[in-house]
Length: 316
Ligand SMILES: CC(C)(COP(=O)(O)OP(=O)(O)OC[C@H]1O[C@@H](n2cnc3c(N)ncnc32)[C@H](O)[C@@H]1OP(=O)(O)O)[C@@H](O)C(=O)NCCC(=O)NCCS
Image (tube, rainbow, N blue to C red):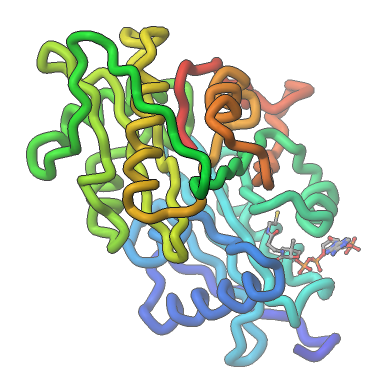
């Protein structure tokens, strides 16, 4: 991109297959430079599934895509992501996209910055956005460090998810476990089905804890390439909290990931969830990185209203 050339920004709620491929290519190029993907799972899925509440912004110079941003106006939140091609950075593309993202946010904008970089912090500061949430990335090795056997509470049976019959029960327990969590607690049946349609989905690695015919908790694991597993979501119904279910589910899932030949496991956890972070630390996880959510301060309050009540067991 020539230094003087201003990008044009196309705005759409429907991404064509050609545009989706261009965006994926831009994200791939940025990841090769930055060492991480700038789009999280929700933003990546939004490229494939049309959602009228999602607005895509494509910054182009001629036919070249130089930046991409997305805002999802769902569940009472406006959550965005933004990435600029490495060859077009420090020329105002990020600022132009963020200006338009703010215009398209129906509620104060929250924007995810994967990893904790100076560039994202400076851009956020320039627009008056404040650091509102941190998502810790914790990892542990499975090689040479066996996971203790789960101590399953009496009356509880841990079993794999049954596709076609467990969806409603899981949606209920997930909503209860994550009632205070803006994204995970708002997961719908459509969101669940989109994730179940992903190539990585395997019900054998999705564990439900059942007692008296009721699902009290779950551990959904995820399989990545390169022998990496993930504690994708771990949740316990508040009614069943404090009885050792979270630990039993965590160990069940970790042992499954080890049996699948994984050598490393990762997870995401909210930075203010001290108890859950402690549970993971007790199981050998250490913080290796963090994602940051920047937020537009809510008018008339000195801090954005983004403090979440602690939960007993919480997702990634
Ligand atoms: C963050 C990112 C979007 C910035 O895009 P960009 O097109 O380079 O941003 P701009 O050129 O509009 O710069 C915006 C401000 O950030 C500052 N900035 C950008 N990159 C910087 C860096 N590497 N170091 C220090 N400051 C930086 C600039 O100084 C600029 O302020 P100024 O114009 O008043 O000097 C880009 O680096 C990127 O895609 N990073 C990876 C994805 C990401 O972190 N997204 C989250 C964004 S919140």
